[in-house]
Image (cartoon, rainbow, N blue to C red; front, side, top):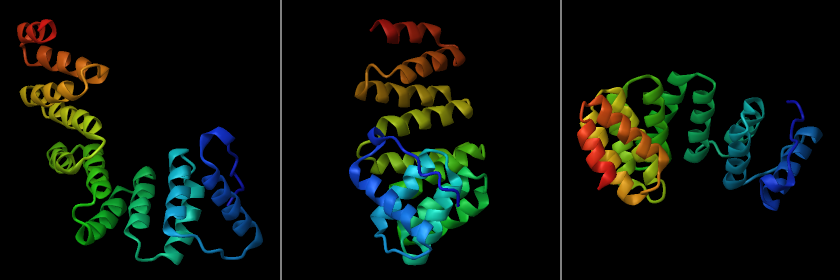
Length: 199
């Protein structure tokens, strides 16, 4: 693995910096250091967010060796596979983890994203709906994704309903305002759109 652990101090907290330094030291020394699941999760997320898939793959290899039964590590393995275009592998991993944790929001959302990319909008919508039922802090993002799936299915009326509910939660959301305008136009209800925006 290339030593591409460069980072800016302001990008993350001191704890992650120490974990990165320790992981780099482990790779350089050839010894196996123990990291807890949370530390591995932070490292994997850091590299996945940066698109450094070789590095995230290296971390995953060590994480799975040390914590072979950790569902959170396996979910990140699915993310790695999904990001690398290995969609069937990602789904296979998620199907196994879903049997153990059927209500895990990360599993549900990742499956929704995968089905969306596969253009299986009906299945994606089922998973986004399931995620929305359990969402605690990211309802707005899930509702936008649901509306976009409905638009792909040309179910503009239903998309309008979802977006109206979203705008009640977040009245200034520019994406929602743009999409609801688009849905009114596509559903040939421009007058309803005007009424909505002036009310």
